[in-house]
Each structure stands twice: as C-alpha cells, then as structure tokens.
Image 1 (cartoon, rainbow, N blue to C red):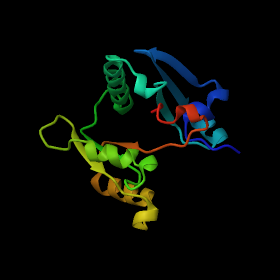
Image 2 (image 1 turned 135 degrees about the vertical axis):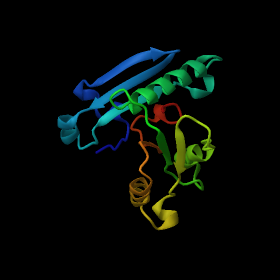
Image 3 (image 1 turned 90 degrees about the horizontal axis):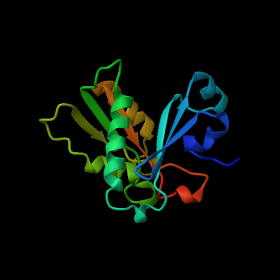
Length: 170
C-alpha cells in the first residue's frame, strides 16, 4: 500500500476534486464528507492544495496572486455561519532539527502574535514525540481545551505519493 497525506491523491478516484488556475498555479479543493470519510478512512473536511510546479521558477507577481487566494481561502474556511473567529491558534507540528520535517514549527515561529490586531493570534509548536517524549496530539488537544480558540490552523509536513509534489505543493 502506498501512503499519502495529500487529499488530492487519496480522493481523486472519488470525483470530489475540483481544480482551478490561480495566477498560473493550480489550486485543488477536495471535500471529504462523512460518507467518504468512512470509505477512505480519512477525516472529514475541506482540503485545499496549491501546485506551484517548480517553486523556484515562480514568476514575479505570481506569489502575490497566490497569497491573496490563500488568504481568501483561509477566511472562507474560518467563516462560521457568516461570523469570523476572534481568536486563532496556529499549530506548527514538526522537528526544527530536521529540515524535511520543520515546516510546521518554522511557520509557527514566523507568526506575529503581537496584540492590536482584530483577531487574536496564538501559536503552538509542540515538537515531536521523538524529541519531547509527548505525542503532539496530546499537547495540541490539551492546549486547545484549556485556551479555547475560535479556530485552529495546523501546519505540518505531509507525505506525498508523487515525488514531483515535494517542495512544490502546499
């Protein structure tokens, strides 16, 4: 069995994948409902991925369109019955000592959590069990239960079946 974390890879046969072109970058939205969640043994949700091709060859201006679309997509995902969250926790999972697994932790470290914003931002980088001896899931669940943010965005490095996606898909 080939393992992948990419919704675009594990759900493509189910015809729940929708693609569009955003500033020359392929945006794919995959919706996993309750029924499909059971069939695929994956969590329900809306999964959005961006295929940048060779990220080092993105032309000037493309990143601006990509950033704007990601911003809109995140706001859409965070809209609960037309209300916006008042607090968001950004959780960065990963091992800063291992470049291939550092995306989440590095992202959390770059989030500006200074007060004075319309939405309160918090970050959490629980590390990995191999370093801390504690499951990341337990740290995240305990922290969210105690802090109770309106929403949580979890950033992690994913396994992909297609090696062309490595370093070019997010």
